Length: 212
Image (cartoon, rainbow, N blue to C red; front, side, top):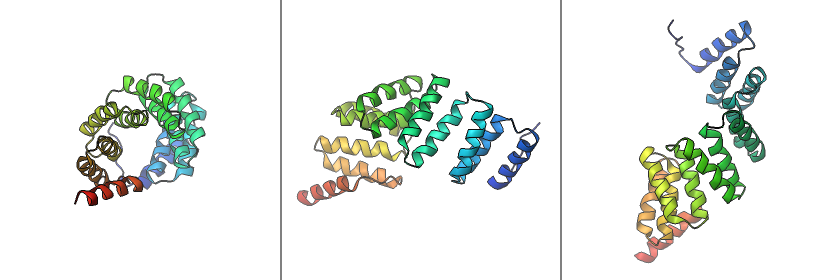
């Protein structure tokens, strides 16, 4: 049987609701409905759907990861951490929650914990671009500039439009005193839509002026 085709996301949501009316205990339908709501940035309905998915399938790690993302969007780091820890316990070899846990630890300033967790994420998925870049950030904070560069170069090779990795590389080149290369890389980061820190942009501008 061929998959259904939908003209827009609202038709897809309506179809999922019809399916759930017939089978309200289907965790996959609740999860897919949550993903559909996320695509519309309707975080409240998405959260409700993911919680319903977990109610009917308590070990659905992907739903916990999505709930963690919603919590992060609200700035609730503790809930994001909690949801992702649950996901990592449900699927221990699933790299995504480990990457998210590492990101939260980094935001909290717990760099050593972040490094350990992110290393685990990369062990499970060596091409996990976000985890590579976040671990690069952690290494940069620890003063391990070359290690940061190695990881972020791999990240941009894997995903040439990933702005945070270019920004990390720019920071590293600035740290090494190569401000021209740093400017080139931060420009690439900005082209992707990434918002580089204003202080760093100001620092690069000052070096450009002093070089003239």
